[in-house]
Image (cartoon, rainbow, N blue to C red; front, side, top):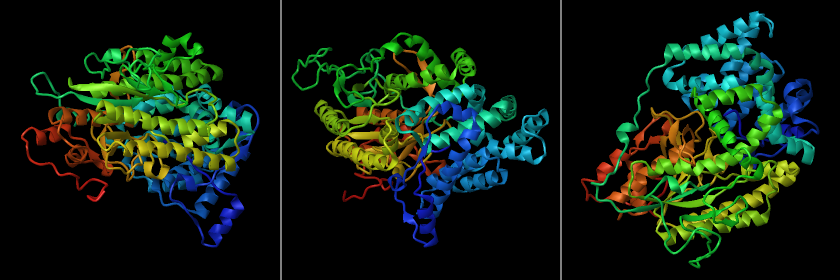
Length: 635
């Protein structure tokens, strides 16, 4: 992940604070101030006109330097991100000694082996090529870059870099001005139109895109060739530790049905016959026949992107999406497969689209893919939860995120609707006997509030205060809901931003509650993925890389994320309860954590087989709380 968020006060104030030795304390993301950079006009133009972006980038660089001077930041992931950003800001002004300096600093703050060894790999190779005296844009420079990049790749161990090299072949092939214009310009154009300014993240994304288009797209052939050469010389089977840890339950097992909430964007219940929770007192539709306040709650309940109650189990497409929904989904699958390094027909079609499509066409795709993500996600999660478990009964508990572009403006009414809706949904779960809830999502002040306020033209100071106020309402409602259900284990995704969930304040991942387990993502070999969020709030890790499951309608697709790791833990928890339904939530949580094994990067790896082995010989008492828990016995 290149960056998530940076901010700064006015340069003079921060410099004065640094000079006085009174650096401002930073406990979390909310303590970092916000910035806006005046700009009106076509945002896509900035990607192909570095001369227009240069003065904005120079101010952003000064603000970053001021932040480092004026704020006492101790979170290593934030410091790594800030120096990564400074490296790209050095690239755009062609200051290659500074590129080397910032990459070295960023690597010094990196905790993952992948980041420590390969962060800034392409900028460093570019700087090496410049050092030969070759002129960028010439065949001699391309050859010098190819040599430098290949020389940097070859020593990297396959166990660390293999997954990234596989992914790069597809990703590099799609890169171009149209791709980045469609990805970023459409996202940030509402800021320029609505408020006449771009925020920190927008500027840093545009700097990154500009450098890629200017410096690295002309070297795409060399990049892909070097990655392919690395794959050819290093590729080797990785150990798959998950097969030996898997538990499969069958008809011969004496099982008790276990109700599990798939708290997500809804899922295609038709794909899981016999494994879906059913309310015999209700019928599908918009009438509340059983008088519980929820209409059509045959297989569960739901909230839309504004926190209002809905009866449908899947999010409906807009008319524009419905007009060509099949083509959109195929392209989205191809885009996912490109990112996973899969050479499929859909991936080839997607690459052709991103290579030849216009900024407008690609921008429309990225806008509409936000809907696809909400439509697809819960079904993929449900498929992982249901694997090998005939006793699971999955309840659809829908929670959709705002997917329109530009987004609607967050309001207190929406925040309070979410806060109340969470409590209502959890009350429904408790009444139905849910034992485990899968929460493959996070809410944070930046994504759900500041970004959307920025897109609606709200200036930085007002935006920060309003976002903090609204986020606090929603986060408190979610916390109250989870605390109200000590008889449910809430299993939460850590996040995919390669940072600290605790520092970012992402909920529910940062909650330190006795009935919450937060899950990081590792690959098949147990090594943390490049994207997974870690930090003190993470309890356990599971397979979250190229995990195969279903999408609505039954198509199989592989995708990666802590969203995929989380249902692997839920799958194990539900199986344990099916075999021993008398387990308390404290016992279940302790059983999962105590049988997890140490892994790279300080994570503990799920071991469903070991957890089940503790039950089947039985009936040895299970300690109420684990020594590996984040909670004391008095809580």
